Amino acid sequence: MPLEARSWQEPPRGADWLPRLEDAVIMAKTRIRTSQFQPAEAARGARPAAPNVDAAHCPIEMLYEEHFQQRQMAQDMEALADSQMPRPDLARCILGALTGRLIHHRADEDESLFPRLRTRAHPEDEIGPLLDQLQAEHAQLRDMSDKLMPALYRMADGALPAPEDRDALHRFAQAERNHLIAENALVLPLARLRLSASDKLAALAEMRARRSQPPAGPPIPPDAEGKAE
Ligand SMILES: [Fe+2]
Ligand SMILES: [Fe+2]
Image (cartoon, rainbow, N blue to C red; front, side, top):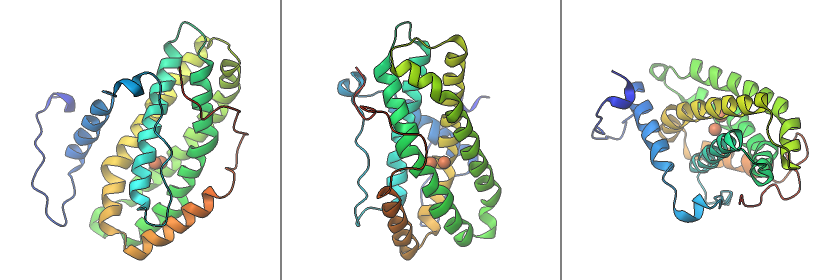
């Protein structure tokens, strides 16, 4: 039976509760389906603000918030891929995410979260292979992003996506969603459980320092953080 067709009830949670893999995937897919029902303002194109990186913020919750923004980016990619008219507004929003927040976010995971989780995880968590896979996906997604960039700049200038651009946008959106499902369902819940308070403080300090510098990558286009129409 497909995962989507199964009825699922959240089990009672104890202090050490972690979802089984199958339940975690269903929970993540449910969250994604629910998130597609946006309020009217979001449907008109408003984007959630970048998370606050103040000293009181939990770095794990901040990564969850950024994942919400990345799901929005995937929706924008699919809307752009399917559009029959130029959508420079959407192309600029996507460029803003790819050249800005996403670069910092992947560095947060590769350099601040995953190494600490590898150290703190218990052997029975068996998280190492998944973290290896997610780090490899970061490199694959970066490669896909680099290849898409020239087409996105053309679309930001008012061009329609070429057929191969439409395919690439759909592939990127699906790859990004699959990546988010694993991180939301498995990695971040385990990080909540295993990271110590000092781990979180140290990770947050690194994330704040990272955001005080411009992201390493192509330039952020003007108006890229604006609202889609
Ligand atoms: Fe992430
Ligand atoms: Fe990631």
